Image 1 (cartoon, rainbow, N blue to C red):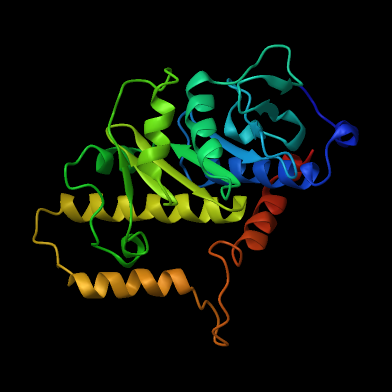
Image 2: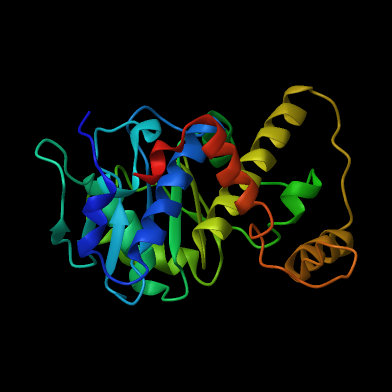
Length: 261
């Protein structure tokens, strides 16, 4: 694996170093929590003050290898602007999926796509995600995108963006999960909670016993409570994921701080 040093940060745009560190941390966290698929899948983040530029992983590197300076910069037209690697480039399907969201949603700062067992299991069910747990009720409005084959064709981008709409999470039928957020912290929190909701539903359905049905009005109430997100006793709202993010970085720093390089 190629080594990268902090000196590589000197040519970055304002705010880009911090974004790179947070994005590398997100890759390491997705790995830590078991949401990886060998070298497949991708997480992208918008470069601050550069609306048309995103950072994404080098295809072929494990998530546990990702560092801040190893990320590749591309624009939304598909041009590679900065690649520190001689042997790696960007995954085509990754570019198609992520550029589709970033083009259509200027409010989105980060997009995460996974292929977990639980995520694909729920994506393969006609019923999709059910409100069987509090975690699932957080996602009262889930988007769905029908399977069209491997995402190699540019024509699918419009349909991906259309199906996602204003939502922050989408289930790709027979494929996997997608989550986004205004920040990397929000996007990570969304994919973590969506994955947990899928795991819980798959486990409950495997018990072959009737599942408790929650009234629709209570599902809506719970979703609204999550949206308001009064996380502390003073009831001051906080963006989802913001509270957990410093703790997640401390976790990584205790385990392996090399993601910062």
